Image (tube, rainbow, N blue to C red):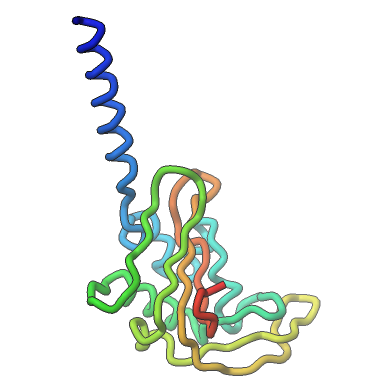
Length: 165
């Protein structure tokens, strides 16, 4: 009987542990994510690369960009605070090391993102030399663990792609 009870207890504990770990914290309101999204500089310091998606910063060809750092922070703050009925279900951070993404309709963060910019060409220093403005339909917020094992906002960008890819 003791073996049966011990086995039941082990299964119950395992089930509870698995259930608890399956419910990861909402990425957008995780303290380390919020800290990494406080500004473009905070994001860089945390190990993220939002900076290449902000107009005026060193970038790469074919990157979509926010018009300014203020547009980026405003968009993230609006998404972080959003609790309306028409938004996507926020992704959870936790468990494994695989990154996750929230692909948010631009209308939910429109005070921060009314316009985006696509850099088409860069010089040898990473300065954008040619590009165009566009009206985004979505904004991507991608979360990942940094080199210290902390969840951060790894990158964010405006896009016209419905899946944010």
